[in-house]
Image (cartoon, rainbow, N blue to C red; front, side, top):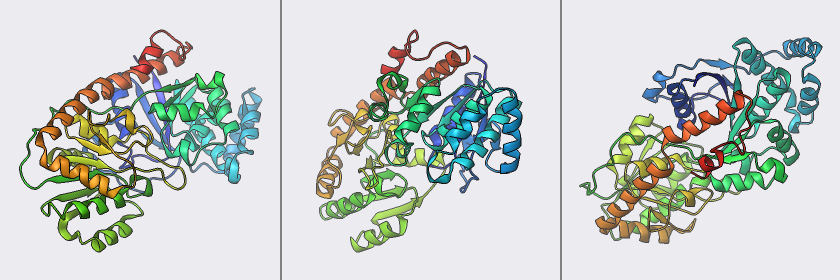
Amino acid sequence: MSYRVGYVVKRFPRTSETFIAQEILELERLGAEVTILTLWPNDQRAEHGWLADLAAPVVHCGDLPLSDAWKWLHHRAAAGTGCERALTEAFVYPDRRGRHRLREAVAVADVALGRRLDHLHAHFANDPAFVAYLAHLVSGVPFSFTAHAKDIYAKALAPETLGRVVDAAAFAVTVSEHGRRHLAGRLRPALAAKVLRLYNGVSLDAAPAATGRSGPFGILTVARLVEKKGIDTLLRALAALRRGAPEVRCTVVGDGPLGPELRDLAGREGLGDAVRWAGAVPHERVLAEIRRHHVMVLPARVARDGDRDALPTALLEAMAAGVPCVSTPVGGIPEILEHRRTGLLLPSDRPLALANALAELERDEGLRSRLGAAGRQRAERLFDRRRNVARLAGWLDRSIRGAPVVGGPGVLRAVEG
C-alpha cells in the first residue's frame, strides 16, 4: 500500500515513547510515506540506534505567529472550508489554550495540504487529537487518533469535546480493552462504536533469552520515575526480600521527577549497592538489560490524579524475550498477564506480597521458565508489532479510500485479534 500520512505528536522523538517511533517504522516498511508533525519543541535527546532508520521528516508546527494563522484562516474561509467551526471549537477549549491549539492546527493543515497528505493520525487523545481535529476542519484531510493512558484517565478532553472529535474522526484507537471501555463510556453509543482496540506491538525477531541465567537473582524494572509506576513499592519489597536473600540485586532503568525521592527511600531502606540506577538509556540497552535479568517487575498503581498504565511496553518486551513478569491488575495489565499462567499479578501497594512473590521466583527456576515460555507465546499471539501495525495500516487505507472502518470486512475480527 502507498499513501502519505502525517503523524501529529506533542514532541518527537521521546525516550519513553518508542511505541510511536516503531509504529512509524513499521508503516514505512509497509510502504507508507510518513511526515511527523510536532506541536512542542523536544526537551530530551532520544538515542535509540534504530531512529536512524526512520525516513520520515520531522516538521515542527508550534511556532506559527498568530497573525499568520488568522491570515491563513481568512484565506481558507473564502474557499468555504470549516474555518468558522474550527474557530468556535478553539475558543471553547479549556484554560484559554484554544488559540494555541488553533495556531498549531493551521500549521499542521498547511503542511498537510502542501505535502498532499492523505490522512492525519494523532497520538494521544487530548491536545494532539484536538489539533488533528481542527486541522481536519480547515483542510478537509481525514484524521484518526490513538489514545493511551494519561490522555484518557487524567488529562482528558471534556466529554462533549471528545464526542465532537470522535464524531469527526475516521476512527479512534485505544491500546487496551480497559482503555476502550473507559473511552467508550464517555461517549454516546453511536460514537463508542468508532473506538477500536489495537494492542501496541513489539518485535519478536530475537529468540527468547536462555533460561537458568547464572549469578545473583536479578530484578529489573523499566519505567518513568512517576507515581503510577509504584517504584517505591518495589524498593520496600526489595528491602524485605534481602533479609532472606541478601545477594539479590535490582536495576532501575528510567528517570523522572521522583528520582531523588526514590533514591532517598532506597538509602533509608538500607539497600546501598543492591540497586543500580541506570537512568534513561537507548532502547537497545533496555533490551539487553531485559535479557540479562531473571525477572521484570512493574508494581503499577492508580495515581492520585487518576493516571494509570495502559499497556506497558516494558512488560511486552520482557514477555517477548521469555523473561517472567510480575505486575498488578491496573489498567490494561491483566490483558498482558494472566496470573500464574503468563506472569504474576499482585495487588498494588503491597510490598510484602511482592517480596514473597519474588522470593518464590528466586528459588523456583522451573516456575520462572514456565512463566517466561508462556509469556513469549502470548506475545506471539497478541503483541506482534508487524501484525498489529498491519491492522492499523489497513484501517488507514480504508479511511483514505473513503470506505468505512468500523464494521468493515474483517475489522471486528482484527480488533478482537
